[in-house]
Image (cartoon, rainbow, N blue to C red; front, side, top):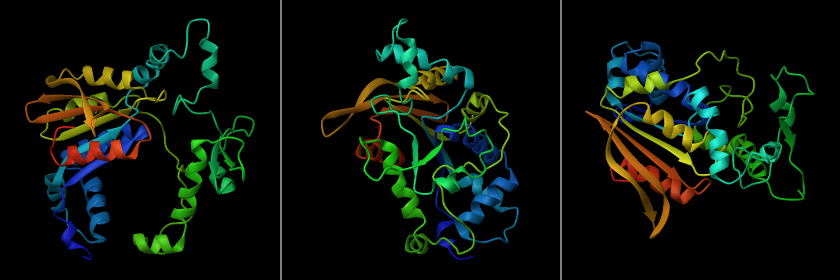
Length: 289
């Protein structure tokens, strides 16, 4: 075992956007003693491929909670919250509904752009749709006419595929090919329309949960997220209130409980590293957001 010192580290499962589908199921499986999931996590943490099944209990014991940001959770609730969100944000009236086609649903205040990549050819591999329907990765312009957030992401491809970076991160040679921020080559069947039942089961545990929403996301809106959280019928422990950084409002938060289970919901300014860091740092330290 290469890193036994990490085996006793507490475990949180986290993700954002579409991770709202697989991650709650993963947490539920760990709690239920799923051997494959638990052994995989421990193997990744310890670099040890020879682990006995009794480590499954160990993995479940270390699990403290989960964190989800703008999580896709329920097709019906999330998708049907977009129009109310757009209306609340004064983006549309009934007459201007068609203008939605020109809005970037990931950040409603920014330009609608193609997805940029330093490796557009590799990024298109595995995408078997008609090219007429494909609106995926395009090479970033050398001198773009205007700024788009997608251009920032090109740097992540360059950084993650740099051999010195990989060596510093401990990525073992021959275990990973070209790294892509959005990997379209993974085959899967989309057969889980909602993970609300998973969240409802998890409320019977002693875990902690942090669910947060960006304030300008039209893809998975804070309205939809609040709606499915409300459907869990949890008890409000701390009422809706603003939370602050340097005396300024960074977002809003509310805390729910159900016996030993706690769920903190927070809104945070989108694409603001300082605010996001403060939120997760406080929560992990058991401080009020």
